[in-house]
Image (cartoon, rainbow, N blue to C red; front, side, top):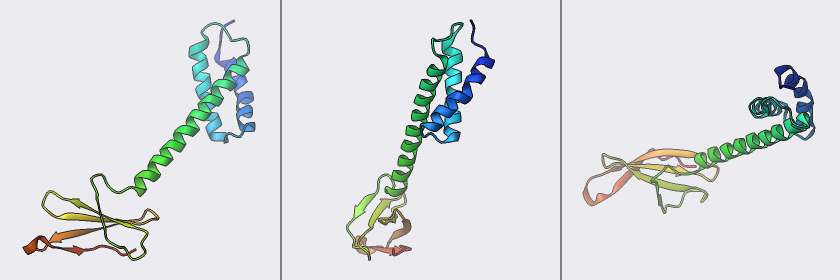
Length: 146
């Protein structure tokens, strides 16, 4: 017996219903079932497994878990990126008004220093520290208080 698309299409609704009953959201479950069908076409060859529905459910569930983990990891990376200071930032010990934020400085190529204030809620405000000349002191311009 050979595998054909019609047989696989007939199994897809049953596999989809199993994933949804297990708690998968419908859209991701559909994607996982399609992934399982693609893998079945390449893995089965000319012979069906003993339990084609069980095989598809197992592969689709694993694909669903992989998709869910991948999405969670992506969201975690995005949150960390939004809440972390820019690369190369140097913390400056300055008391911000609410005490929940941090101030970072980045030296630019022209000798100017970019200043970034990162609040506890992840908000980012930017300003510039411009060299004032003698004594190496700087004046801060454009720093938003938060």
